[in-house]
Image (spheres, rainbow, N blue to C red):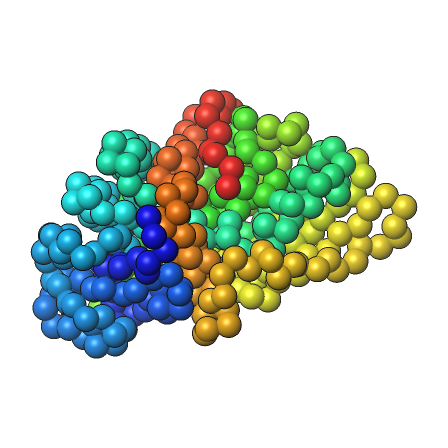
Length: 373
C-alpha cells in the first residue's frame, strides 16, 4: 500500500470528557500519517459537537453508517469497555482495520473471538497497550537484551495510582468486576504488559486480587454501591528467563508512588521510575559490577518513533500517539501491527490466570506467552 494518509473514523470521539477527549483525540490529531475522516457518538448532537471540536468532516450517530463509508480505511474504538467486543467485531466485518483501546474486551473469550476474526479478515487490529511504546521501557528492554544486567535473577514492579471513591453515577458500573473496567483489568493490564514486554514473560504464577474499598458514592446523586472490582493485585512467579518476579498494583487514597520497575542480574541492575503510565517525567538509572553507585542512563532520541512530540502531543497523549503512529505505519507497509489482537487476547488470558490463582489459591502455568513487541 502506498504511504498515503490513513483515513480514520473514531467511535466514541467525545468532545468534552473521558479518555477520548483527554488523550486519544489529541494523540490522533498529532500523528502525521493519519487523517481524521469522521467521528461517531451515540447521539446526533454530540456527534456534531465532536466533529466541530476535533475538525472532522463527517459526524455520525450510527456506527454502521460510518462503517459503510468506503473512504474510511480504519476505525478507532474508544467507548465503554462492555461495548468493545461488539463494535470491534462490526468494524472487522465491515472490512476496516481497527484500533481498540485497552481493555480490549471484558474477558478472554471475547478477546479471542476478536483476534480470530481479525486474522480471518486479514485486518490490522491493534490494542491500546500504550505503556509498551514508552521510550523508558523500550530502552530498559534493549539494555537487558544487550546483557547490561547479565543473567537476570529477579524483577519487581510496583504500580500505585490514586484511588477514587466518588464517581458520577454513570460510571458506577466500574464497581462491578464483571463489567471489565477496574484497577485489575486497566491498571494491571497496562502494568503487567509493560513488565512482561520489558523484563520477560511469566511461565508460572500465583496471585491475589482484593477489593479493599467496599463502597463507592455517586458525586452527582449520592447513590452508594457495593464494590467487588479489585483495587489491589499481587502477582508473583517465574519468568521465561528464569528470574523470579513480583508485580504489585494498587489504587491508594494517599500519595501513591507511581511506577517503579527494578531488574537485578548477575552483572548489574536497572531501576526505572515514572509518576504514572503516561508521564513524560521518567528516570532510568543503572549500575554494573564494580561501580559503587547507580547512575542515570540516557534514553536515545531514536526510541521516539514518531515526531508527534514536536507537534504538540503531551501528557497522556504522548504514548498513545506513538501507538497510533505504529498502527498507521503498519497499514501503510503491510507489516504486523503490535500489539495486535492476538497479543491482547494473550494478556486477557494472563489476567484470567491471575484471577483463577486468587480464587483457587493454586499456582497457574502460563502455556502460551504473548508475542514480544
